[in-house]
Length: 392
Ligand SMILES: Cc1cc2nc3c(=O)[nH]c(=O)nc-3n(C[C@H](O)[C@H](O)[C@H](O)COP(=O)(O)OP(=O)(O)OC[C@H]3O[C@@H](n4cnc5c(N)ncnc54)[C@H](O)[C@@H]3O)c2cc1C
Image 1: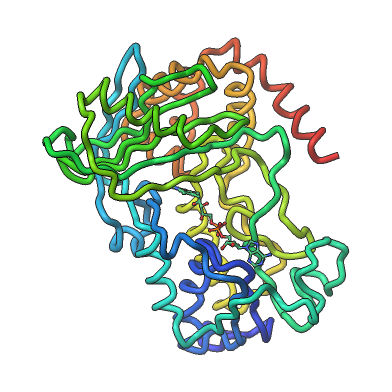
Image 2: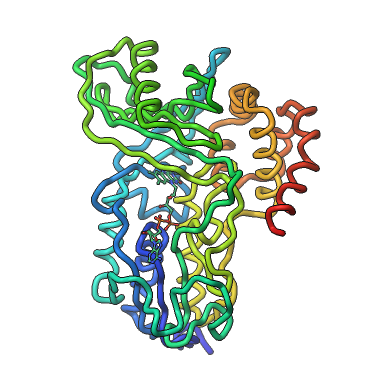
């Protein structure tokens, strides 16, 4: 088999779930379907995600595999800051700038790129073909195959274990009369807000001097009433920027599990959040989804049989994330100090690499040395005990 002779292992490719991962995979497959390098028929099942009309922002650090997302992003920042009541760190990275991408822009572009190459089946996956029961009873023929549906790549939303830490948030994109924001610096985390209900910070993306997305974000096990996040945003804008009058242009809200999730149906090949793409310690997933779907498309174009979907996080990152999550759960009050220490220990390039799964040994060493040792060491055993209980 040479490079120019594609070997279709699967005559049909079925993508389940038309959200970020499903549509991004459709986008990644499209050029290969058009060129005939992948000669399978491909279809995507499920209603289009609301994020295609009701836009929210995907934030990510620029990396080599995100060139198309970078092209489409609304704004990028070379400076970002982490702030607590006790200190502030501002970092800079030209190479790994932070980008804000509108979900509607990305997803519509995915549809455009995939047009004519994949069939869009708005309904749920067809039950008649032995699919869609989601019971994981192995009624397929193995290797992610279900009778009649060929290679199934399942991006349907996974279940979340009960005691998971959640990243939950509500944000407003606002417009002010006065020019109050520094449009060059985004705020990744500002802990100068109410800490009484868990780890709470404000995430602020300034699009201009008078427009910004301002989000009240928690890492905790319980979501809050809408009014709580709204109140937090109002208080923050008043206390920090002395703004009380502003126009709300749009709002966004979400809840991302910060945990190691099992695929919704273990007999299928899971992708996206269902396929382990959410970085458990941060909730970031967009960059990892793109990495995963591009890898799948490349393997299929090379004629490889896909028997396992690559999890886009390295074992060392998953190990550290597990300990980090255990620390956050056991010591939420230490979170502002921990994030500030992390930012102080690393340069902008290094933080961006760490957040994007590209850390090297020196970055891990700096992080480990910067952390409060006692509470981290104390959580190593509980972190792994907890995960065992969940699997059983
Ligand atoms: C508001 C919000 C903001 C976020 N911001 C960021 C960010 O800034 N940076 C970042 O890296 N990550 C971010 N994330 C996290 C992550 O990138 C997104 O959650 C991303 O959409 C996950 O992609 P996915 O395809 O796995 O899931 P989804 O995009 O949720 O897609 C899953 C799809 O499966 C469908 N589905 C479910 N059940 C079925 C069924 N039975 N049959 C058919 N279809 C079904 C759903 O309707 C949905 O369309 C954010 C998440 C949210 C919600």
